[in-house]
Amino acid sequence: MTKYIPIAIGLLLLLAGGIYFVFSPEESALFPQCPFHTLTGWDCPGCGSQRAIHHLLHLRIKDAFLCNPLLMMAIPYAVAGIYLEYLGGKKRFPKARKALFGKTAIIVILILIILFWIGRNAV
Image (tube, helix red, strand yellow):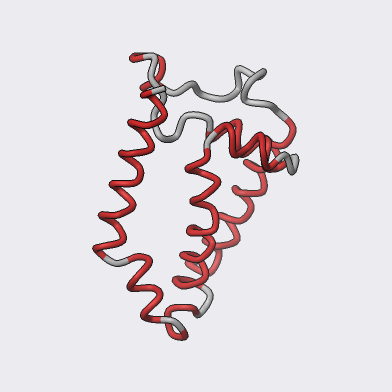
């Protein structure tokens, strides 16, 4: 049963990617609005991520970065995490895994997210 989980996740990602490719979050009511932005008028760290994904799927890298630079910078980190955790990287590069995903890294990432959150609303 557990061998089908990666297949199910892959199919869901393909479906979500297809939806984000076809429909623009700026123009479609299909996508949820950010509750934090709706309540406060301020952007959360994730605001613009849906638009960034749409632009990224259309290979508009600059537009994606302008929508949410934090997401764009997090993509290589997420890919590295997938490699290290699921594709044999943790055996080949245990020090890299510890450095990138250890306790200190989590604290640094949290600080970066908070600074990004403050910075994008300070303008």
